Image 1 (cartoon, rainbow, N blue to C red):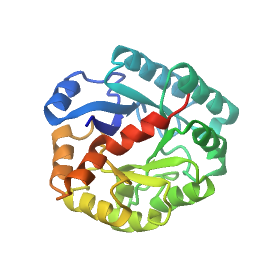
Image 2: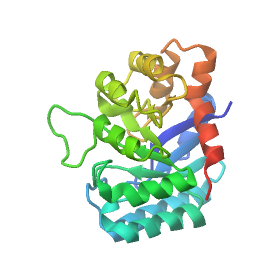
Image 3: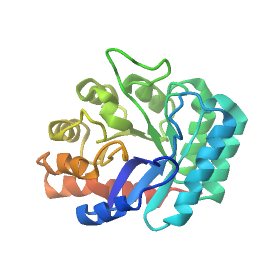
Image 4: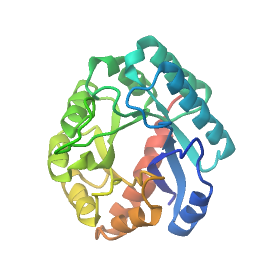
Length: 249
């Protein structure tokens, strides 16, 4: 099995090669990565293009260990779609990163999601539900579910188990094209076990949110979830490996 981390980021424009050494010790061989730059909620089109250019450079530097999500700000319409095409068709990126520039189910995202369906891209969508401090365009599991129902051929990966695992898993439970990742500081072994129990072993995948959280701690919460060997293999990479085999540039 190839262990795959489906949720990482560049750190100040680079991917720390020390992570590969840690991955070798922990059984994680491949890292799916996006670049959110300085984590601005509403970056300009030029800033988005630059983020993706920097990521493309890191993908060229580590072709055996990294795969890329193209960051998209859907507010730029045709220009956003053109940048996505360039990064998928010319640079081999395998997915899309949606963060907090728009809600996931905003109609502005529709052309982006239609392209994702056509190319079988993974759409890694941030989701969180906060008591205080929610960003104006920060999606919750309800937004992810609504977008996925409107685009049933799109493969959504909801980040952080939705930030509130009990309600988030219930929100997407009836939407089969939504999977969840295990990243997030509030996610522990119990939440991983809950997600597998309610969604099934093919809809939960390993993600760390590097560099913000330690890789070993993230591996540990999956190992501590008490999964059977088949479920553990799928979470740690088997499912994402099958997704990657379907991506069509």
